[in-house]
Length: 440
Image (cartoon, rainbow, N blue to C red):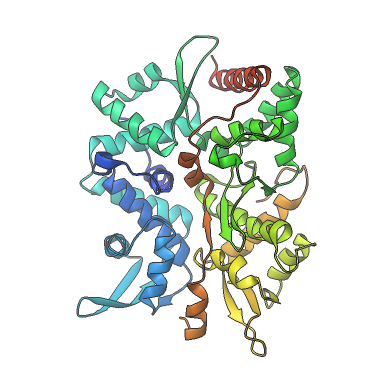
């Protein structure tokens, strides 16, 4: 591939990005072309979310945690083997049955660098390496078909398979440039990792007089965790106001992130815009922050018994000993999604059996995620700094899930139907902005 070998840190990062993107996608025969990427990505995500546990002596708990990252019980031993070979876990068995796991997982940059080295030392294919390099290249800047093929020296067959994988997982998108008439590729990761470019986007929207588009995006920027209507991400656009249709298009392009929480009142999506201040190797901190705030927004807008009125006060309590909120009857369901992500644990109140506490696991990473969630609450501001008892085991297996923003993209199957004038504004402004960012 013309010697375009990435640093191991970038390889590890992109393996995680790709596995997250294709987790819910049936790649069919392309599964065989991505097996090493997906397995390493699974191992990375599992490692990040068990870090700090020291000892896990309940294999069922581990299976529960792993299932949230697309690692079913049949694949989990393979992911654990990767972690063993990296020296991050020690698996204890009785016969063939795993009964205990001891972890010693390092911090982010060390995880990704080591995982990247592991990938290079694995029996990976040219297609897998090309997929990682193309993903990384498009996260840095939009580029044309011909430019990327020439830069990487890919033959037509390999390039076509890479595009099929990327478009299936929606980490590769494209548009036709009005300026050059070329087919331009880009990745939604570009906006996540270059949030400063959104400021350029807002400036251009004002310059071009696209007020409807500007105001729709500003609505999300000014209220992080904005609750979306049930139909918006399901492709049901009848009777949606224009600003929601514009938001649907922005989500499809990755300009707006829309992670999903599934709890008491069903699946709900909450909109966020990417922000400045998070190194790309710490994107998981942003994911945790969004998951924390999305759970709070769920209680704020969809609580059944009582609704949250002061979200910042809840975050403040999570940052001070005993790092606990509650007790409340809805906590068990509403915050269960954070248990599997290693953010906290749910404890039953001793006197009343139907009331629960949520308690933060006060690692530096989790406290940083809560602080980031507080920053996301600040309207219109850019970021500047960025072993179980039987009772708790029962709590772990309660319904509820959280889906990362990149996992949501493959589920957005159609564009919103928007009036011709607004559609023209959106597409022209977004496409022209992408051209400007790549220097066309």
